[in-house]
Image (cartoon, rainbow, N blue to C red; front, side, top):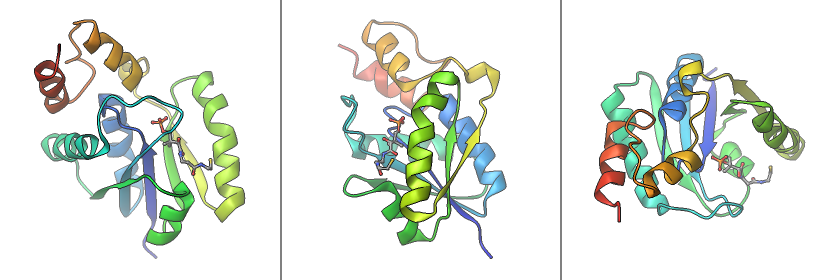
Amino acid sequence: MTSIAVVPGSFDPVTLGHLDVIERAAKIFDELHVLVVHNPDKEALLPITQRVSLLSTAIEQAGLSGDIRIASWSVGLLVDYCVDVGAKVLVKGIRSQVDVAYETPMAIMNRSLAGVETVFLLPDPAHAHVSSSLVRQVAALGGDVSPYVPPVVAAYLERSAP
Ligand code: PNS
């Protein structure tokens, strides 16, 4: 049986930490859906179409292997997407106890709603301090984000700097 998993996130923008999780998840599952999800709790920097475009280019340029598909989801439950594509697993990266506290109730709710399990991957220590929100802040204040994001994202943020 084909194992299908979904890596959901805001990806606003995609970071090297995200790419690391995607690369490792693609080695575990036969088919991986990287899903850009609208998170109403966060004020977005980039429109969803731009996030999808940067994610696609970043995955292509990183030469990640495996069956990796990119999609977006802005209406309805995340588990509805999982059911639609036959995914039984969500994959999330966990950097700290703060992430554990944030992710645990969602994981339990997603299992309760649709029997979808959540698998947590620990980050490469090199990326443990990297988050999209910090990247947005560093970029907005004129700092160099190239150590934390794929080259296509660094170039995009540099072009759009005020
Ligand atoms: O990158 P983020 O912002 O931490 O990603 C969070 C995201 C988008 C994965 C999270 O907000 C989410 O799972 N949203 C789906 C909404 C949903 O289905 N909620 C009900 C069950 S928890």
